[in-house]
View 1: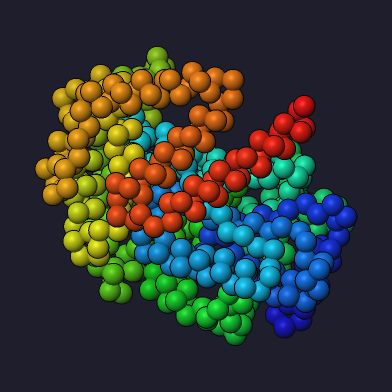
View 2: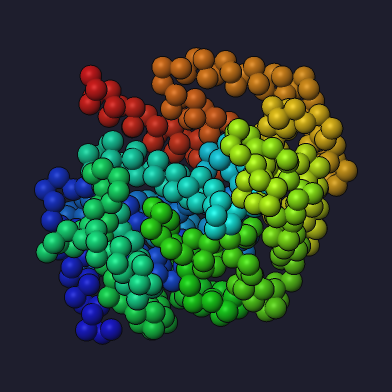
Length: 449
Ligand code: SF4
């Protein structure tokens, strides 16, 4: 390790200074050990470069699926805040960005709203919606601004044979970068020869340049009885999604969530309602009573083949929503109101989807109000108004559909902040969102005349 590290740092410095017209670096940060080491090694290498030469922007991108393990989310957010602050103080060209799925793509809008069965290996509808698409949008945005982008990942060849094969296949001969599936995007994995032991050795010996040691990270892994990460997923070749932990707490692709079991056993027993909810999703997924007899499409239906069954029945969707809101209430009572498993915006979107599916027997607001003291109103009038506004917005943005999503995302930020407890930071988040959008539009206008 001691021999490899100076070599890796030199390689990073060389790569950083290579381009005359520097392509931005996008670092996929998941808060796990590999991406933490990557960010740290990269940071320390950059500190050796004179500040006037540090003019390549580096974006640290962290994707939030909105169904992350709440304990891990808290840890990642604290780390990212420290990274952002330390980067500004130390004059590093590093900025932190969080990506999230669009409202219509969230786990709850699809599972509870549209009735998609809990994902498994044959119907894994979540990875693209929750992970690949949000990050891809960010990367594309940067490519449209700068022409090309380089994505830095903490992937290592000892992680798995599939990954090693994929790294080899996409490698550009004699070069450090490999091609990414997206046009004009390249991948750089400086840690590819580092072993898992070496990662831990490094993190135990070297403090974080953004402050502090890595004790909390080590404790998280130890308590979760795991050594595997859920890294930033940028394409379908990333094998760990759904196979390793520190991913979505609701993941039903694995039969047991050993890391959550470990955390509960080691004192975080407030997470038990989450485990119970996930287990119910697994147990009922292929229960005939929970599924519609027909599919949304006209594709053939076979009684004996659960892969041909339709979505969850209205009763199943209402039951799961009730269970989820109960779990949320229970956790909020012990951990504070900030512990949110589903947003108000998602609740409204679920009600809208139920109406579109002709479900009038269950009302989201009724279910919510039975469980919570704070009452919400999602009346027909409100929904009609919501639908009209949504259609109006779509019509107005017909020539540039990206405007529709931009405005929807601003509204989502505002509603989540004002209806829920966390109200701080709305202005700066909206400003950041707007700045990114204006910059992208300006480039598009210049490029396309
Ligand atoms: S961790 Fe599981 S639920 Fe989350 S995106 Fe991956 S496969 Fe889907």
